[in-house]
Image (cartoon, rainbow, N blue to C red; front, side):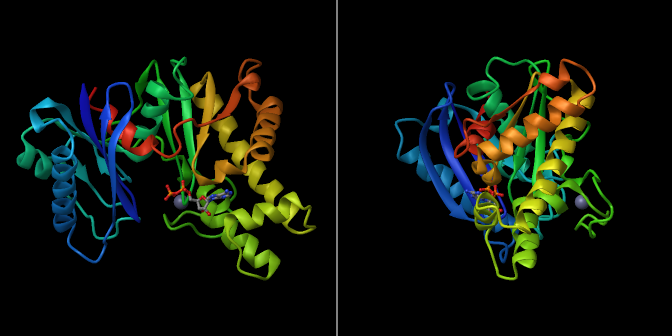
Length: 300
Ligand code: ADP
Ligand code: ZN
């Protein structure tokens, strides 16, 4: 069995033909062009799907469907992308209907972090778990919760937006209007911005972590604050959802051991239940392809 996964991001759209075993057979990437109308962008996606099918031995009737992962907010049941901050002009776009009208096969839409969580459940770090949380620390911070083997969607498909839970209002104003949101303090974007301010030079997120690893006197306490903030988020997840593990993905998770050790340590001290204090914090396994594989697996 096969399906097409479409992963729509603020900078690029990845489109892939994926098998029910999670294997990516063929993949293409097109830039997200926010200067054109969303419908024009959807036409480009449709054209790319046709090219991928043309280059494969399959035709449209061999597909279980097309799964789409997109940034929220969205309405997964109506198949509408509502108003995502990273896709500025995509306001109330009925993407499912537009793609379904073209290909006449099932088309499904989910929040991108929820789709990635599903990919980790089917093929990655959550294969053996019925209950786990997937957290992506990237440009922003999002999460997807697998509860009793299923994605927790919520009423519109927007469950898991933990990036906008307030951790410490003494930090500044987030794009959502609240003060001190998790992603305002601890996303890759926030770390690069604040780290650059502290160091007095423009640094990438990775460069900020390199200074931390060298023991930079001002960056070190800052990164410790970031780790503690992410630890607080993990404890809140554990106390709310009682997961077997927390899987961490996204560019910032490439920092590796220092991040995972800090989170494991924080959780071991502050999660409420004795079992919660032992929750494993582990890296995602599908990093590169989690988006398209998760989107495609919505159809299986
Ligand atoms: P996206 O947000 O587009 O899904 P990523 O998951 O790759 O993309 O996350 C991008 C973020 O991760 C950026 O803030 C980037 O600076 C950061 N990042 C990428 N690689 C590293 C690294 N090795 N160490 C720390 N941060 C990184
Ligand atoms: Zn916010």
